[in-house]
Image (cartoon, rainbow, N blue to C red):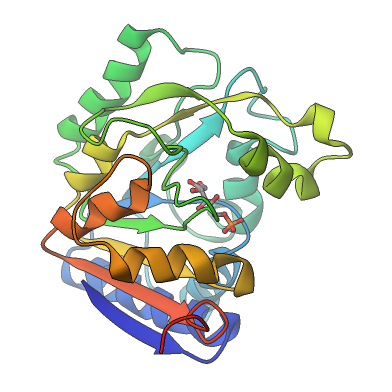
Amino acid sequence: MQIVAVKDKRELGRKAAKVILEVIHKKPDAVLGLATGGTPEETYKELVKDHRENGTSYKAVRTVNLDEYVGIDPSDPNSYHSYMDHNFFKYIDLPEDQHFLPDSLATTDHDCARYDDLIDSLGGVDLQLLGIGGNGHIGFNEPGTPLSIGTHVVQLTDSTRKANARYFSSLSEVPEQAITMGIGTILKSKKVLLIVSGEEKAEAMYKLVRSSVPESGFPASALIQHPDVTVIADRSALSLIK
Ligand code: F6R
């Protein structure tokens, strides 16, 4: 696991975008695994800026998102479909039939397995972008999730619902379940890019660098088994690490 320290969220966005662009430049039809949330916002801004200024094309790129809330309509402003449109897709030339998110309304085991099949049929993920939850979740794999699991439906923890309530008008509106790529799905990616920002992630970052064995109580620890993980973290996220 390679750790890259940066000053702040801005620099994190620039560095993360650079890693993603290297993959696209090398392989114009790359499969990108994408994340939502506050941390990647700057990264998407940088990618959009690069698309405008340097013309990097996404015409052949395929994208698969990590997760989506269960029961939410894709057109709902709080859906991850909307997040991706609003932060990234509407500004680039990625064809509409080349971006995929888990279906919030198709949540049987069979439906979940179909998302993994879809990823396999695209040739697997070349680069998976990840954020991390304060409790160590990756995707929406909450503590206790088996480390080899594929795409599945999860019950969100109170801490995750509270952390995400900032996007909703009240905590009660935050869905209780999500459909997420599993840790097994994530580990199949050829390359993983984890971005970590802010003091509220310092403890999770500390635990991650201290992890010597993968344990389901701290899902991000599964990443130590992966041969190609880059972590870009800002000063506040690294504040507990001497
Ligand atoms: C989002 C996702 C989550 C977030 C994590 C951190 O698609 O899978 O694991 O990456 O909850 O969220 P932020 O970046 O909002 O702190």
